[in-house]
Length: 501
Ligand SMILES: *Cc1c(COP(=O)(O)O)cnc(C)c1O
Ligand SMILES: [Zn+2]
Image 1: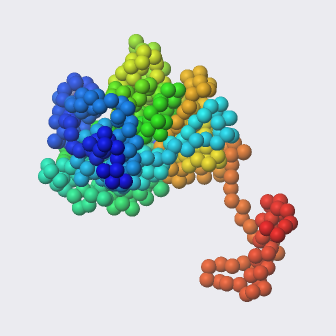
Image 2: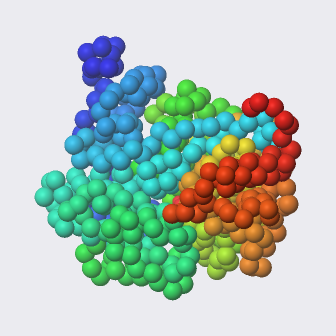
Image 3: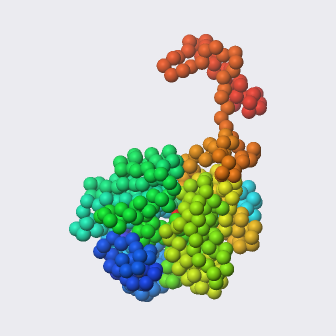
């Protein structure tokens, strides 16, 4: 649709322009720092940062109802730069001009309602939001689109050149970073550090395929992160971990999309989010808070963070009575929710800061953290996918979290939940394989439920001497016999009835 065909009152707002002023704000000393330079932590006190718009009053000057119509009409535009996270340009990155935006197809992932069987098991209505349908098959693309658009903006402005983008990763961050960096060749190159044998073969194939320099390091993610931090402190590199506050901005789009898909009615809604490095839950909270503050939504949804009992520092923190809460990192144990196997989440100060604000906005607790077993995560994933979803282990963790929160009475049956399916099932299919073949190492504490197991059946009737093979075709008679006998065996196995098909 062309601009002139939109309603008159929408036209001036339809195509977003570079506006506002963004600054890094330190969560420790609250000082502001300019965004002309890439910063990850406060130069004064070392604490993590968030990016604020210092001219946010201009957003409040537009009534919520008009905002809602702007976003709804904007969805009809054919301009690539506003097809993804920058549909919400004014909230995601108003200082980024559209010509700097990198859009590789991320965002606007579907919310798929669970079928009757699943809703009955859960005792309530719920959806999976399939963030595995992003280009590198995880939600990390939202944040990378933002971080790399900002880097492209710096490159176009002549502020930086020959950027080396670097990150430590449990797999998905490096896949996304390498993909977006590859698009900005030759100005941006990427290097990723992965914990040796702690990412899946699929995840390893992604940065390799995108042409990144890949390093494997002994230890777990937390160890890789320390090496990357050392590099960022001592050399000129662009850090793409979630310390990078631009990533949080991009990931806020997840909340904006959900609000829009519910016609901005967030009453009785519950968001279920797995927690690893805690960047995702930070962004989800912040997204809803921003829409709430401007009057685009009038209720904040509940937010339930979920952690595995094998990597649960955030859960333990909130289990402690408020008066003696002190964050203590944990040593993680093996987890099928491998991308969340983090004992010392970088975004913990952001979570503490935003949870406090979120819980005080409407005068009631709205943020909760539950923990689930490895068994529940795996069973959850397999159950979901048997009912038409494409959840990875972390999506399974979301489902396990829903069940746990429901059991504890944190969620009521008349509420509607949205489960974050953070990556595509295929990225973590190795865990499904271990389940089906019952070969989880003991420390995972997972034993497969027979009703959820599955395996292929090899069909070769004993009385067949000749079977086809690559490069070897059978004579007519042998081939006909092969087809008939194989079909008969399958029909028997499936208990098929005679008929003409
Ligand atoms: C990164 C990741 C998480 C954890 O998100 P955080 O922002 O680190 O809390 C969960 N699931 C998947 C698939 C991920 O890639
Ligand atoms: Zn500071």
